[in-house]
Image (cartoon, rainbow, N blue to C red; front, side):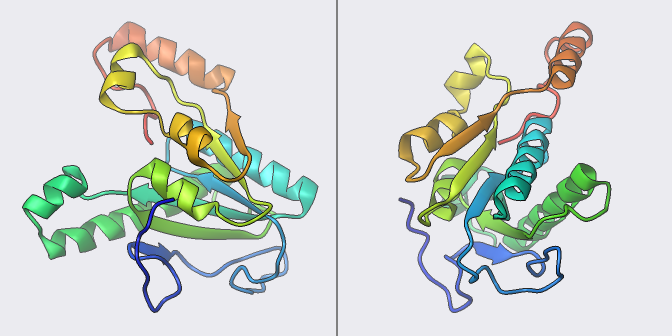
Length: 202
């Protein structure tokens, strides 16, 4: 399990909550109610939005809490940042990560309420390790979107889903791409054969 260190805020180093925990009642218990949790990785990609909708559907069915986790790393990754640290840049990256998660939630729910208890967390760290670390309670369920994985992508960027399936201590639910996403990707391949896949993300 990833070791991110500890902070006085109650989150591992590099993690921070984005807004209060908001549920159907509007009450905030900080996630201490003891109810089961559904942890979902949200990068803003189409696949992650599909995973978020599935997580919410599961939460409605089981009366669980949803923890939406967005992971980020400095430009060039942690190794590059250690060689050339720039603390002001980290602040900009954190704010961008906060904004991206909020935008993803707005896109997923049209700016409205998810209808379940939803908490948000922005984590500095590689996606696979950070998600496995976040879904560490008994009874957790980790939900991930299955993105398009070409041969080149598998070589250059290891699969977050595969990492989580291998290392998670809880069940992992992978949500396949929707028919709409597959159609959009096919359209993009025809018009922009060298472009990055539509909605590609962690």
